[in-house]
Image 1 (cartoon, rainbow, N blue to C red):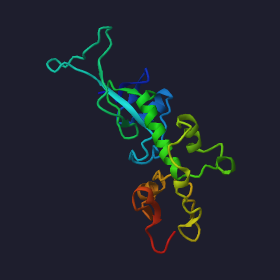
Image 2: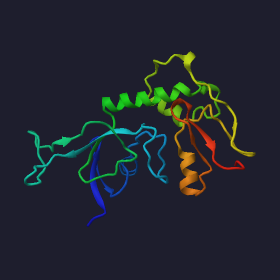
Image 3: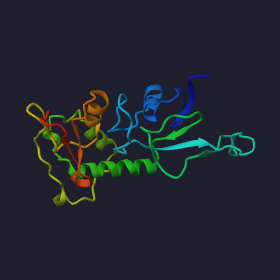
Image 4: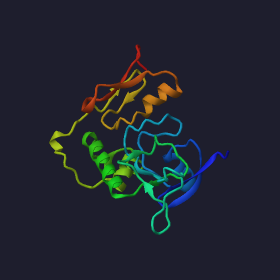
Length: 212
C-alpha cells in the first residue's frame, strides 16, 4: 500500500504522507500556514492554544455500497461534523477536506487572540521582539482589533521570575503555550519546569530542588 493519501485544503488537492497532522501536511505539501502557538513538529501535539482550529470534513458514503455520495453538480458530498477541530492534533485521512478560512474559523481565532491579550502587555513598540514576534504577527493577521475586556481588569504578571541562578522567566510576556515544558519532558527527558494552578492563575514554575 502507498504511504501517501489525498487530502484537500482550501480547495488545494495534494498527495501527503500518512500519519501527519493537518498543520504539518498543509504547510509541507501545499504551503498553507495554519496559525499555531503551542505546536512544534518535534513535540507531541496537544491542541492547547486552539489557534489552529479548522473545519474538517470527510466524503459521505452510501451505507450499503460504500460509494461516495455526490451533489447535483457531481462533486462529493462532504460532512464537516458538528464543530471545529484542532489542526495540530488531527491526523490526515484519505479524502479529507479541510477549510481554514471560513467565518467560524475566523471568529474562533479572534477569540483566542482576544483572550491571550487579556494578560499580555500591549507594549509592542518598545518590546525587544517587536517586528519578529509570532503573537504580534498573528494578532495583526487574525485579531479583531478591538476587545470587550476592561483594561483596568488586566492581569499584570511579574516581569522577572527566577527559575534558577542562570535562567529568568519573563512571566509578563509568557503566553503559556507549553512548548518549553514539553521540550523539557519529551526531548531533554528532565521535566524540571511545569504548569502550576489553573485558569487565570496558571503559571510556569520549577519542579526541581535546587532550581535550574
